Image (tube, rainbow, N blue to C red; front, side):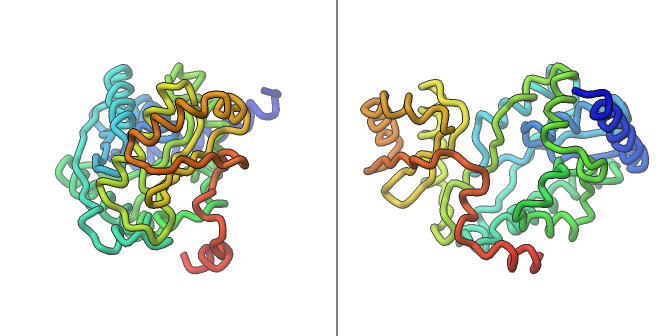
Length: 281
């Protein structure tokens, strides 16, 4: 890191401290991902254990592995932690899987966390959105605004790369973890979200991890699974095609397709009129 970049990061981290001190006490939406783990660890240093609570929402849309990561990091670093159940699948607006599905998911999450914050006497609910997220289509952000959720990492203008670097300096095990949005993001819009389909995706992605693949998505297309793997791992996948097919079919898919374009961020939104959708947020 250059001296200029290091100075800029120091300034951003100082702004993050100021935002957290403004909040005084916080309830953090804590998924176990790179951003939320860093935010919770940093807030612990700034505010102390009596004024923060990291809360993990549990549902069929969240991989068990992610709950386990959230729990392990909280235990390792002494972060006060609570797990709560969320029930977004009971909302027919969410289950129908429209292009703004995340709005209904986050509405459920922030409603639950607002109640938790009130019960524990915490002033502000926080999420882990960072400065890069503004460039993506994120309908869940509207739910955050409606529930007065603050995004300290974004307010401090911290990018994903900077958060990874700061996480590494903190010795956080999540510093290089692949991004892991909810399992429902593997279903194309319009394909109903059901516990059975989410379970198929989770099982298939578990098999890919067992085979040593690191960055990927299993896209659910009814009876077919479309595998998006990091471009650097496509050749290895072709060499293991027979094993891949057998394992993915074992998760409940009749057909297994390999996407030769490989994994890319935002593939779910390909084909959407993002300019129009962002304007409507």
